[in-house]
Amino acid sequence: MACASSSMSTVVFNLPRTRRYPPIQPTRVWPSRFRCSAGQTGFFTKLGRLIKEKAKSDVDKLFSGFSKTRDNLAVIDELLLYWNLSDTDRVLDELEEALLVADFGPKITIKIVESLRDDIYAGNLKSGSEIKDALKKCVLDLVTKKGNKTELQLGFRKPAVIIIVGVNGGGKTTSLGKLAHRLKKEGAKVLMAAGDTFRAAASDQLEIWAERTGCEIVVAEKEKAKASSVLSQAVKRGKEGGFDVVLCDTSGRLHTNYSLMEELIACKKAVSKVVPGTPNEILLVLDGTTGLNMLPQAREFNEVVGITGLILTKLDGSARGGCVVSVVDELGIPVKFVGVGEGVEDLQPFDAETFVDAIVIKGKVKN
Ligand SMILES: Nc1nc2c(ncn2[C@@H]2O[C@H](COP(=O)(O)OP(=O)(O)O)[C@@H](O)[C@H]2O)c(=O)[nH]1
Ligand SMILES: [Mg+2]
Image (cartoon, rainbow, N blue to C red; front, side):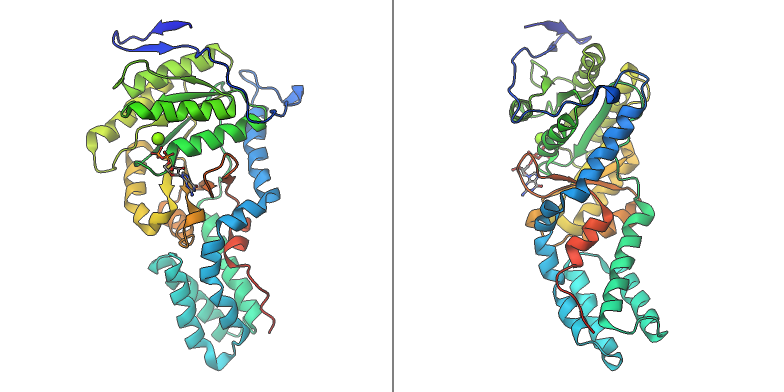
């Protein structure tokens, strides 16, 4: 096992971990013309785009992931099926309630309902199905207007660095593992960095994901190592070992804990010293089951470290999928992935149109 001391005498890293992890399934080999080498800009752009395109072809997962939210909104179809002009106010009141229950939030809900009311009374919407289409368009506009950069932006230098941040238990480590799987499937060479040095079990959990996905991992040998040192060593290893992407896990932290939030700034600086321009992405993991309660923490994380994208997890267990719309509208940060289960395939690239279909498609409104 090759060992290297970090600049801190107390911390020893395994570089690289010599255990060989069998991949859970054969990885697809990237055609050689797409192969990444430093300075070749096309690879990362294609990687981001390809991962995003999969979202359109893999809609079933997204549909089942949002089934609880869709069930919540199914009442809209019933309402619109029997809509007529004299019934408008009652129907819109009920629509308002359905949107609030699905956690669209009061601001967005009022925006949507009032826009529909104006269009109905102006004579622009004349049937239930026209109202439903207008509703879908309204939601789509809201998610795309402020958050349209849903593809991973990995820059052009190798390795690209992604840091995953968020509160405890939100799904950071799990999402990192699933993301590694996606990137590997597209032919990227992925290194994991166990930057959650707070809990002893945290790096063990990430090691299991390394094993499942066939990735190499950098861990601190001693407990309570500085996260910034671990990440810095990992990015060095990534650079020397010809890795395409380094995925950095971090400890869960409350957005109200100032010193822990400062640690994230140190992590950011540490990786940018090794590869200028990194981290390319700082992805904030938000637990979808908390609905709109996630907004204050997202704001704080964004102010301290500058979040480039969101991963909304556990949407499979939540009927509050409408919060996606409010989060994007309030923060102006794109949702890049959604977690729809605990399996390795259960991280879906976020696609706005598929999302809107997944939450409000149910049945056809005829009139
Ligand atoms: N149902 C479901 N569970 C998830 C999802 N993402 C994570 N989890 C579970 O949430 C729990 C906490 O996840 P973990 O990755 O350890 O959170 P961390 O503390 O932020 O690193 C674990 O039991 C995960 O399996 C998801 O998208 N759906
Ligand atoms: Mg974790």
